[in-house]
Image (cartoon, rainbow, N blue to C red; front, side):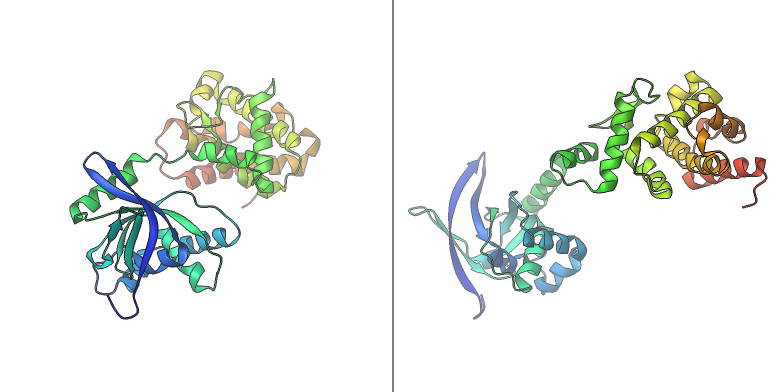
Length: 329
């Protein structure tokens, strides 16, 4: 403890689970910012803290809190000897020294770093954050708890997060258009993809919402689409033409493979561009897409091989298409 360190006393509850004991409490962000480090045993825990972390991620957390965001999950800490931890059971108060080496961060180091950046920027709002503190853990126990926290917790699927963004009204315009298009393909009676989509999770032989979004985004950006009904008609005609060119049985198997779907969507960009240039009124006709796919997809077997490069396969298909139409690239 140095002359600049102070002792903080906070209300806390002692909890016992099996053979393990820990304290739960809420801690002001300015206290968290000055008493925690991911590497408190280093000679210089301050620099060790900053070398360990992703500053951009911490800054995004700082901005999120500054703008009113809520972080209800607990930061998990291990009290070090320098914390001088003392618990007064009579009034359920936990005392400790506020020093950078007082607590090892087991889980939540980017949140702590974000709070530190927030405090250093002059943020004065008195926010309190849930904290769990383990007393007297050995380095082995700290490592085991770290492993448990980071392996037993299952991340929420990206597919579900995309759908929840709609409920939370946090979608950007591009995501709104993509969700509308995905819904068209789910619900329209003539949709070639209606039974091949999975909205909430990854499933075998299904196109997940994440794969769909990643594959379709370049089309939205290339053609500046704001009419999802028109884009649905174009793409549904294209996928139906793919089925006719390679055969319905084969298309049922291959189109739900993420990399195949992505390649087909990328190749659609070249074909749609040609149709729009030569005969815009034909952009919704299956026969028009077949006319071009015969020149490229019909001569390729990429979907039956192990694909080593997505970009190379798209480039091959596009070159076959454009060579056949005598367009120099």
